[in-house]
Image 1 (tube, rainbow, N blue to C red):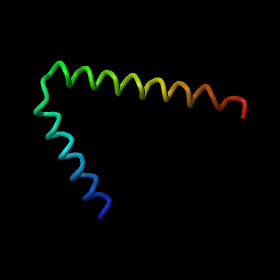
Image 2: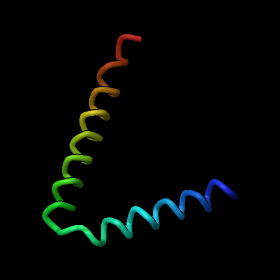
Image 3: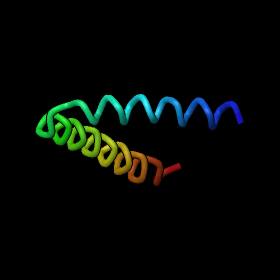
Length: 51
């Protein structure tokens, strides 16, 4: 229960910070994070085929 409360509090802080950033900066950061996650996903899927 404490973990859920902490996660919700952290999410609220991050969303509050994102709401005050200019839209182009927010979109650039979202694109960079999405690209990093996509690259991570592809590397994880293709890297463990031999094991």
